[in-house]
Image (cartoon, rainbow, N blue to C red; front, side, top):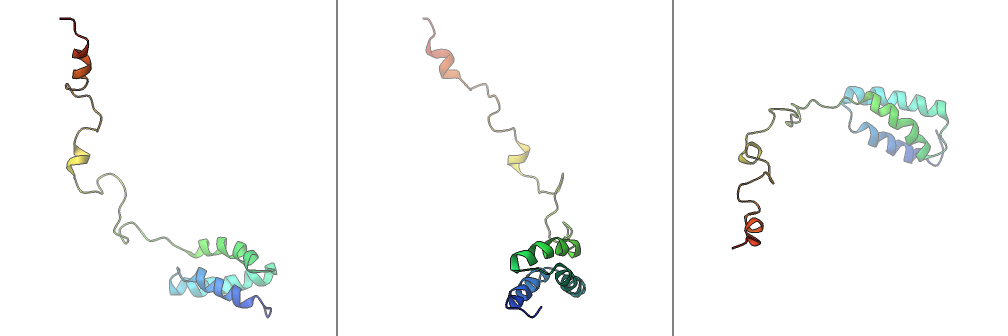
Length: 105
């Protein structure tokens, strides 16, 4: 790829490989260069459309425990707000003024 846009595509390749582990990064770069050579991309946008799905194949998302953000039942600390009644629940005092406003004496 000795054209004027090879620097842009190299920057794109580096940017997409940045989120990968070093072992995955080398494999991704080799696969990306082969895919770009086979596709004969005409620019940076076309190269992105070829490389984005390829990068997703090499990326493994971290587990919830490694990011310290477990999701699901029991994953949060107990709180008074979560354990209390829902906001807007019926209260015996609700509507007291309206009930007594038109009372016949």
